[in-house]
Image (cartoon, rainbow, N blue to C red; front, top):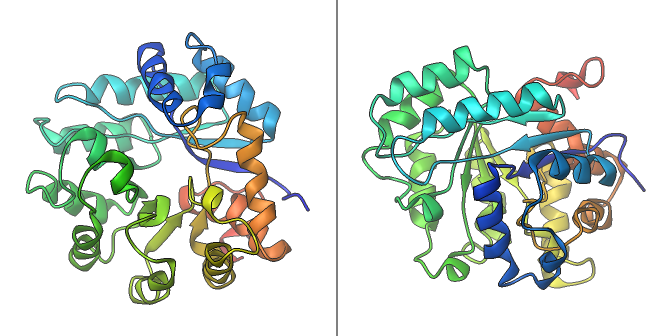
Length: 287
């Protein structure tokens, strides 16, 4: 069973320097990435995903230091202009000055699709006071906001579970995407209550499906979430820093875990398309 389309909803195509660092980082835990050339170019990464079956790609590239955000966001625009498959997301750093101007340029001038933040890698707490005005503005804008959650033990840091739930309470109208579904830090069974309480919350199952094979307890729990909330779930590869290599191994996980055709189409592309207003089929917004 294959979906009609596939949107890779979580990818990190960056500058060659950052790509090289990312591949070195993931090689520590996913040895198959030794096969991926450290000097691979952004264009080659796009081709890898297209050849694996991706029709569109949500690209996330975030700054590691204050003052980098504007150039990174402009780089994202240039990448998308060169590769129409790319749907680029903006980011900023809590230490940036002129955050309102950065957001305005990203969404209005550059026409980027939304924002991505990675508190662990960018080195801030989700409820960092410097970020609260940012959330206010993004909630008002209504754009999708993807925030890394989960895998605290992998990063050697404290779980962000309670802060994430507090973020939901403070910004219930923000179109928030929980990347990695707080994997390892929140039991899957708790998502049912959280999803019921916060209708603007979406789940990004990137890097979680690798740990949820059908027939296991976690696989069964994931299937129950998908059955109920597939219209609010997306999936991506995290390429070139995902949990398997080559990338088509990750794409195949969606068909393995989704219990039926309708949920497969939702997780593979429909939900992602609705999030960014991509009309792949007539009347998609009502499906």
